[in-house]
Amino acid sequence: MSQTHEEPSQRQARLDLAIWLGLILSIFAVYAQVGQFDFIGYDDDLYVLKNPHVLAGLTPATILWAFTAVTASNWLPVTLLSHTLDVQLFGLQSGMHHLVNVVFHALAAVLLFAALQRATRARWPSAFVAFVFALHPLHVESVAWISERKDVLSAGFFFLTIYGYVRYTERPGLGRYLAVLGPFCLGLMSKPMVVTLPFTLLLLDFWPLDRVRWPKILWEKLPMFALSAGTAGVTYAVQRSTGAVGQIFRLDARIVKALLSYVIYIRQTLWPARLAVFYPYPRRLYAWQAAAALIFILGVSALAIAGRRRYPYLVTGWFWYLGTLVPVIGLVQVGMQAHADRYTYIPMVGLAVMVAWGAMDAAGKWPRLKPAIAAAAAVFCGVSMAFAWKQAAYWQNSETLYQRAIDVTADNYLAQGNLGQYLLRIPERRADAVDHLETALRIEPDYAEAHNNLGVCLINAGLYEAAIPHFEAVLRFQPNYAEPLNNLGVCLMHSGRYAEAIPDFEAALRSKPDYAQAHLNLGLTLSKVPGRAAEAIAQYEAGLRLMPDQPEAAVAHRELGALLLSVGRTEEAIAQFEAAQRLLPDPEGAKTIERLRAGQK
Image (tube, rainbow, N blue to C red; front, top):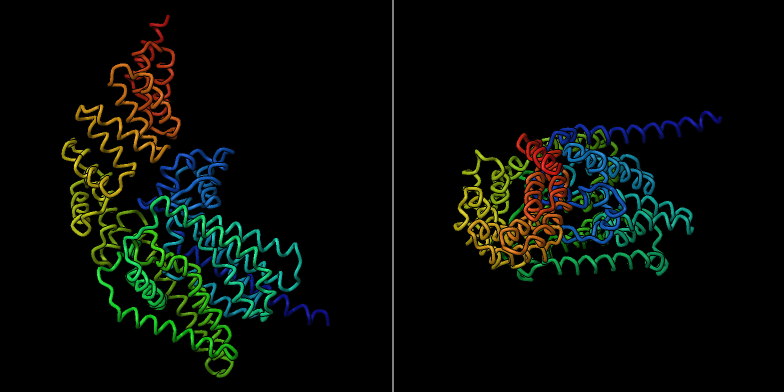
């Protein structure tokens, strides 16, 4: 008899294991290709490539910095520490950074399945939702973009919190409650979008947990609501202080676009075609579009509420979708995008829940439909997998990514500008870079990044005076923008206008104190002004402390060595020349060191 009771349990365990393996293997079938992909020129420099703290590796100082830093206008200590650990383990092997994202995505998919199955005791609908989450093309951006580590991390903690909450509801206790709060806090420190989680737990109380007991279910979540409110307040204050929150678009335009975005995301979920890394804000928005979107949203909401007794999963799924999108729907405009694929990473789960449990209901009422429903689910997952594989391929490098965005969107000034910036690094493609930058400025004449990069193009051509108006144009829009301040200083320095260049470098450093190149440029400029050698040496030293040990730092070491030599500090000069030799060996540098050593004797 015991064997009879054990066999179903063992069979169920094997089924669960098969689903876990299926999720993991299908994810790696889609995303294994990213192991060969590059960093891209869109935030990857902020999070990894040019972030001196991350590049320093995991140290006590880095850990302290991660908990006090603001990066890309957000407080994300857990995300920053994960990037730092990647650098510690893999250096700047971009493929490994990508694959870590894939691992976190796979863990999130497994946790989603485990949480839904434990909450509902319905294996196959839970598996369908997890596979949609794992394989949908809209989620490629969150997985294939190194800078979106915050998505895959926060989603994993989001689903782990839900799993812990289901366990807590089965047998409430302090230990189990702390097991809910712990991953929730880690999720908030990965991405502030997790602030909607307490609201999501209230939806789960309605269905599938069936434990709506007012006010108890509200009281038990007060600590979580307090953490969400605090995180939301800090995030808004930080984004506003750094200029990420803007009033570029009027409130009525933002309301219209928010309503449209809810509908657009549903359309993209059902038909994920012409996806892009950036969608420009539409030049025209019409009231009838907003009215139609509002009617649709209110209509679905009314139907879900009306059917709450017979189809309670519709309430949870629909309001999960609406609620978790609120922080990024655009009512508070952060950035210039109209909408973004990555914003659907957690919200799409709500839509998938509606479809999965609706299909289960249909199969229960009409058993003959079961094979057709199972086949449709398999086909949807298979097609999603193929589309996701193709979409992921566009993330190979900046050129493939931005060219795809240009091909599938209209007037995409950001993609044109960023492609131009990428091509600037390839000497034989600089003419193409200029074409893309000029196109970006024709679309958006006030586009600061394109002005800055076109100015850099002119610097590379030695046309310093011609570049100055472009940097001045940027600074009219953004007077504290560190990069164009530094670039303007470079132009003035090379034009022999040292006294004018110095304030620009100093302003760049006030805006961005850890800007290594600005320190070095200021040091070089001060070295050309009589009587300011000591200040120049201090700036060189500050810049080199911020630069990782790579060949690019060799030039600065040699310049500092020459400056130290000019003021009679020969031993220190030799040390700088030797540091340059370690980074970038040079026969002339070796001879210089030998000559100086011989002179000391």
